Image (cartoon, rainbow over all chains, first blue to last red; front, side, top):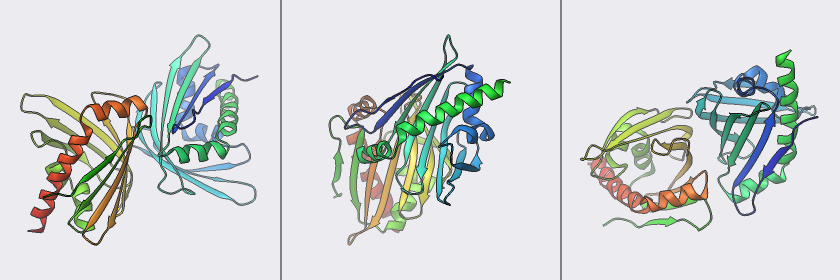
Length: 159
Length: 159
């Protein structure tokens, strides 16, 4: 049983807001976002394999990974970390190589709650069309699936 | 006599779009955006002095500067370069230390025209309120003034 993933995408605005709670302490949830080995275990669809090419999760660092599907499809992603504040805040850019030059900004805030951790994210897209395209491509399902996988990683890490 | 600075900021959207032409070749205009000594000569209000602390204008590089007014006021800015493509494209983040955590994304495209260079920029703010605040703080006047100063730098560089 997992916690709900609340996703808000108002019409006519280039934002996607997601709120999700985790039954794990902030430091573990944050570490799953900044440790490349942990990050690769939960981000993206389960049937894709992720190869991390760079992942320097500090302010000013860069990240890059490639996801591959069983049919041989290859999806590249890269960005830079504008801010990484331990157990509190990650602000980073995001670009998919299938849409070059269309860069979004992601803000993720981490806070302790009675039950564990709440993550509040906002993705800011460079146009309404880019936001709508990301929604149409299945961002909602993808986020929910990734966070379900993150639950599993957090359980495994605590073992 | 300078070219007009076209600024568009639609209500209810977190974007500011600026288009400006320059009577100078693309490589000169681009260099004025990536050479820290040139950049410091035209960015921001004329009565402020800029001290550049970092300016690594390459993909993945960081930038940081401090502007000071005659009364002793200090305004710090920093960000990262997501993309720097010579004579074509700069995508970077932007944060003012008076509004920590409120990060915008700037996209600047450079193209050659019959008369010189056209720059088309989009600033993407993390909320409508952040965009409206930037407009209220005088972004329109600031952009126009900076680009007038850039005209002067471009004339001087060609001497």
